[in-house]
Image (tube, rainbow, N blue to C red; front, side):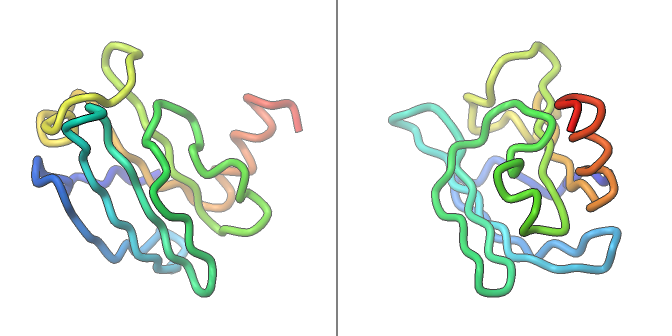
Length: 113
């Protein structure tokens, strides 16, 4: 699990993320003032996930666990959802990239699968 620490308080951000398994994907983040929340988009090969809300979770890409060789975990200091534009830059919210084996481990330990 690797924390993505490059996230700033800019409302629109784009990254090319390299996983610990040497896979790469494009990640876009966008903050909505009106909804007071963050949204993400992921592109991996021909698969695109567009405009999904970032919520606290052990793997917010769980529905793609059999398609993607990585996952994303979102953790907060106070167990609430990300709601502020500076949540990532202040460290209140942490954004982690999970390896394929970590996704499998989460499936076993959290979902008994």
